[in-house]
Length: 328
Image (cartoon, rainbow, N blue to C red; front, side):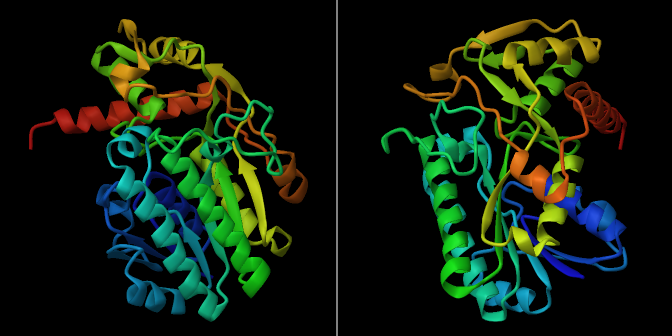
């Protein structure tokens, strides 16, 4: 099979490329490196079946050409991270909506199946837990910057489903819940790599808010397996699937576990949301998925525990810090 991965130099995209190549498939990565990194795919250069192009998914003629050469498209290109979303709301909205429109339009001409990556953020402030794919979405006001990301990804979902219903383009939407693993950067506010780096450097581990908010973290290897399974199952077309772990942890406890597993003596400090992001910033107390839909279709469940994930990230970042410390 021939796969096109937009955003393929990103954290999840690069792991997806790894796994597809390991299974004997061919992969072409498209990424403008705005949040991805060439280092994520450096090890794939020269490997049989792998190609990459540094450009944007908004480049319609290029996307059309690459889709012509693909059997399946994974559309992962997006603005990511709370900090980027708060700082650059225009980039967030334009990148997420326009690029998805370009990919779906070009894929529809050739009827190439498309996976569209969405996010648990679309559930907004809903308190109907665990979150089900057919549950209501509850957004905040348009004056609050963080909701621009949730709304833009919800529009992506509407587009993907509309293309299936109206034009019979095979599409699948995956709502990803806090995917974590090696190569993820804390640069844009991702909590686990940020905590791990702080712990390894002996810096204060900064918990935003009061630390009682709870999240579920899923290893990228588990997520990749779900993404591959969904695009190889025609019954998934035109549907939305939660993909994530159901093991909850408070952010305060997460900081403690990172510090312990890293053997760190870092101080854990709390930072008010208004200091970390913007005045009036809202966060959800809990965010836990109902994953029965993807389990029933594929038999998929997350296999790695939170401690497994943290140990993996700690090892990866410790090795990176060691390599960076070596003289050139």
